[in-house]
Image (cartoon, rainbow, N blue to C red; front, side, top):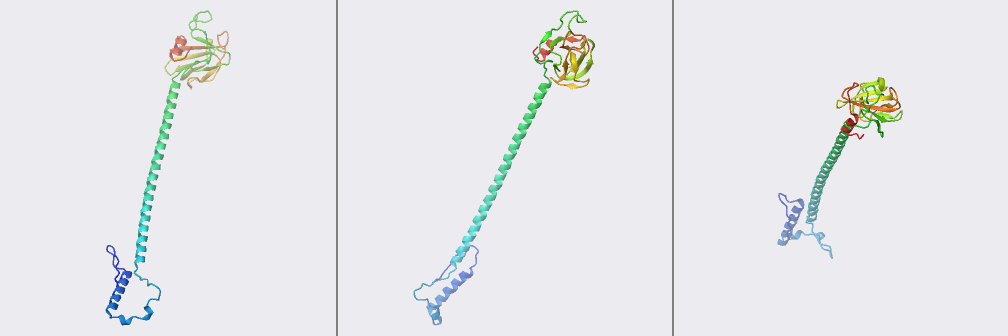
Length: 256
């Protein structure tokens, strides 16, 4: 009986294949009686057992299976590596997008803050919070050297905080004759505001102020019959250039 084995593409017959072929040749010679007389009793099969023929096929199958397993494992590892790279790229992209969103939110917040600050710096407030006008503009009387009131008076007890009504630069801070302790500010729009009869002054000439900045405390210094704040709006820093302070404040959004 002859045994054959597929050698595969470009595969030379193995040692096991050659052994099987040699055994097949020996069997053929025995059939023709050429070497039949050489058979030894020691080679005979043990009674009651079936001879197992060594063809080498088990070893060949095992080797091929191991090669397939290694190839499958390599392919799986390659796939895992590709998936890991894809996941890393996706994570990096997600991180980049998250950072971009955070940056955009921060920039939007900063823009909003800048816009809010810009609006605040361009806004106006009342010089005395929660007060009211006790003496109006151009009110007549002998108490004023010009014959009439050049500003408005805000009701205020002595020591009440006085605020700059808007952004500007202090051009006068000190004694102002009949105005007593007074502050004059050149506003950002080129107009001037004046605050008189202060009990104390909290700013100095050349200092920049913003809306709501405390510039002093109300009092009764100078020519006055009692504590209050005298407020003027002017076209220049000098006395006599006054304009209607109520209209001035209302034009800048302050309810008076």
